[in-house]
Amino acid sequence: MTVERNVWADNLPSGLKRIISSADFNARFYFATDNKQNIWLANLEKNLLPKNIEDLKQSLNIIQNDRDLELVNFWQANQRANAIYEYDDTLPQKLNELIAKIDSNVKPYDNKEFKSINAWISQCYLSSDLSNKITCFTVCYPINTIARNKRLFFNQDQLKETDIPEFRYTLYPDFFLYNKRLYILNLDKAIKFCDLNELQLKRANESFENLTKIDCMAFESQKMQSFIEEINNKKRIQKKLVTIPKSILQMFIDHPQLMINNMKKIEQYKSTLSFDSENVITIKNKKQFSGLLQALNDEILISKLTDITYDVSVKDEVNLRT
Image (cartoon, rainbow, N blue to C red; front, side, top):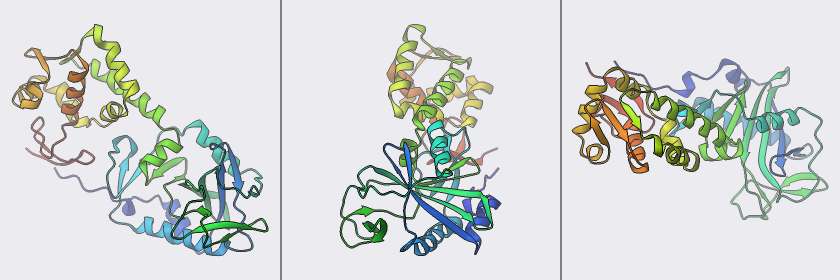
């Protein structure tokens, strides 16, 4: 069986495509400030608005037509190059609150200081249909830093382009929101800005709980608290828990003896893990816990455990041998 590459351009939501492709495309621009608590209008009306709208549309068109972008579920994210990650879970409360503020009557940003700004936001829509919107976020660090281009400064409460080092910005989004789903291009920035770490931790704990229910895996009860501490304190452990391929888990459930026999043939697993009986892997310490997660993620191209060929960067199944 061959699994085709999940190309973003082929799976683009129709409503999203309609906005990006329309001659009726329009946008407003905003700043998020004060640790993401406030939204202010980026006042471009007299100077840059038409140019910025056109530049934004061109950026979104590039993303829309990029056939090298693969659409990957957020929970299978693995810092893959040329991927757009779809987050289809419940949006964090703070992000929902921030979006709601955009639709309120926000005031122009008149502070004339850029130090408190942490995101450049654009809300795209059709002039004939204000209800259907794309909200794009570019996380920024604009503390009077030297930039090659795309810089703004204040002139009579309007924002203008400048050659001096003021606010550095870009119209290419790190992530965007459409129809209550996040589409992420810059994984690290989206996780931090959207407070997704808590959700990753929740998913990791759920994954660990599922592992404890598999008959061929045993976790020493007196060490259970230390395993939980590893999950709570280490992002690397969380990541490995949420990216375990379903195919490998299912093989441990359906064919435990076959999987354990295969593991015993692989030196790195044989020397790390404890096989206390023919049918059980016993995890006695943090080192073995980490080794088990490495085995479950099976970070090699052709898995010796399942005999499945993977695209190793995101664990997409490529070919299942018969």
